[in-house]
Image (cartoon, rainbow, N blue to C red):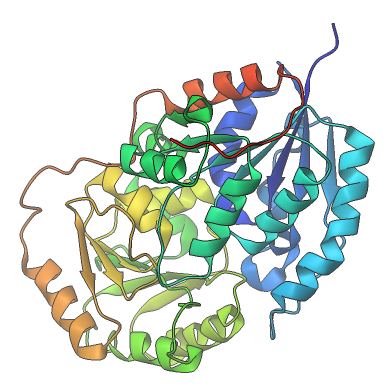
Length: 380
């Protein structure tokens, strides 16, 4: 009996690092294909294609549509990428497609898959991020998908409320949260020397993305954020690049200027998952508005300052403090974390479940055996 064909789609570093443990689990059980989205090729975002393990896949296909990162046009990308994705799907004729998250490039592949009548598994549905257009995109992908993997009961209930079949919702927890708990760490000295980070200063790991659902101009957002950090000269800031959103290129440009002329700091286009999680563990705090600070960081019990509205609506663990996107609020909150000797209570990661990787991989393999079929709205 021939192996089932499963397509994994990865648009950027953000989703590939989370998908890889599932891919590794399935590599000998099914024929795996990878479609690489546009951000993996972009030099300003770290050319993350180099981190992809080619031997996991029977074949890898590249997205032919490009993104102008100086002026991101989401409509243009979706319009131009759909014909390319349609051809790839027709050529492979997969039993199943696996997608993660809420990005516009993922939405494009979801649309192509849906109209080719291919069943879609969607990971991380049912979540909220009020300060980003990703919030709407996520729910659209849910409606295009047949199977849903959520990380928490609250998110599961939200997927149910969208009219999805409860039999097709699997609440197995976050892959990233489990990876963060299980990763084998490099010593602090070794990883700091490898990356050129000073050992004598405590570090603040910093990632800040545009609030794409905000009336505040992008330049105001990044200027406000960076201006709040100038007084903290006793700390070393480790910046990772902003993503491929509208405004992301501007953010990275301003961060590079800040690193050159202000406090002790590094800027990395892409650390890679292993390096990133190691730096996260050894940080004094995590700062910014990245989903990794909400989902993965609680596994380390490291304090997080979540700035602004981008992640507003996600479940917040006890290690996370949220503040407004204002200079005064950011500075006050950083000082509050610095002065706290330790977290009040041992943290529990709200997205973590035991054996998430194993359960998710096994279920995806089972679902790949099912026949193709149509979706219907379910009154739950």
